[in-house]
Length: 414
Ligand SMILES: [Zn+2]
Image (cartoon, rainbow, N blue to C red):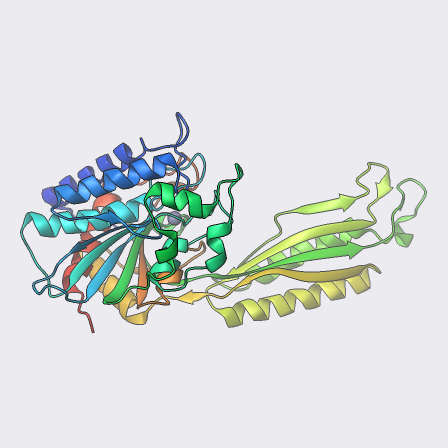
């Protein structure tokens, strides 16, 4: 379904697309987009963002944690703010839209208001976070964690591959390490992040926009299967204790369990067999499981089921299996008021509002500890992200912006 877009909406979408393309010039590597946290390219991108804010009449600055922040006052100075934004750091060889869309769309919302000298009952704050992808340092979300008052103290001592500490890089960038710990914001009534979907659902359903209900929680497990290695020629099938065929059956059982539940996903992404020879029955296998779901209880039930299946398969095949949990992060539920407001805004611009969870993590999770928070997804081609093939249409770009402007106008700070 595609809503009719007015010429002015399309023009705003084209302008935003042009900015996203121009923004890709700020890269650490020639001929591809790589903009790592606190790098030279990140600094140049931040300065360009500040200059664009200036053109819209905003005084933007780099804050202590390396975010670019700006404020568009409401009718009354000092009113509570609706904060809009996303991240401007990227993975290596990135696409143009992951993060950058939400940061530049936030600026475009203010440009639209400012062009008509329109002031709202609340202020609009723009934020361009810097540390979402977690490529350079072993940190992630430090920008949004800082605004929420949860800056991880050990982050500053992390070093990149060349031995530069985050503290040093932050000073060079124009941040202020000591004050990053004290950045907790007051007066933020809500946070909304627009972002490309990074999944194929909206495209499959022919919808340009989605409203995020939750950011999936995730558990990672490491499974070890012990059988008995033996001669591939001399051991009859009936006497084998093959660790790899057991692991294969376990992998299928994991897939089968995940398929039974909508919105739950489970992946065996790595599997290694020992001794790894053509003529030897595998005696040991090690594999990973990654399970994600929008509700923690559902994820916990799936893990319990999968553990039981693995144990039953191991018994039946006379091998032993051990499971170790290597990572666990709870789901983040988006604020019901923000979900309702975004759904209303999406419908107001003429498209049906699809509610869906996010499979990937986002700054919104960190901001949700500070204030009501939520996300608007924009359809992307093939669900592809973290890849130069990342693509959105001008129309979707425009309709996402239109919905965000509508949301900003209708928003009421409680
Ligand atoms: Zn992103």
